Length: 108
Image 1 (cartoon, rainbow, N blue to C red):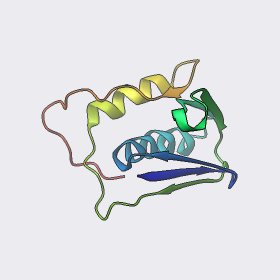
Image 2: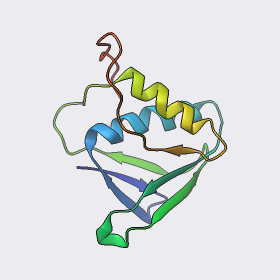
Image 3: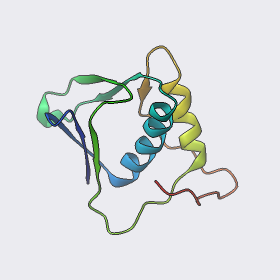
Image 4: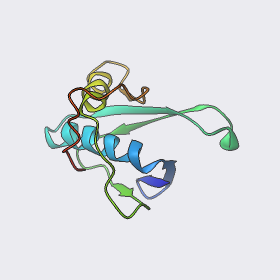
């Protein structure tokens, strides 16, 4: 279970595999100087609501992984997440689609 820390005050748990995909999508947007919303459904232990944060190029973010090896990356999922990130509602998690052509060679 990895952690995304935003502005040193918000810490959210995500599985390492999910976090790796989020890092690639968020990193691509921020490298281009693009800001975006990122929204997710909260864990039932924290109230079972939704949280949205505004990500901008200088936002203090930390991606902390607890697994020893980088997770395999599904290019189709990156593409799907990037579509949500480019929408007016912003980045949100979608179910992982089947891999296209077995391309798992990208590392976060």
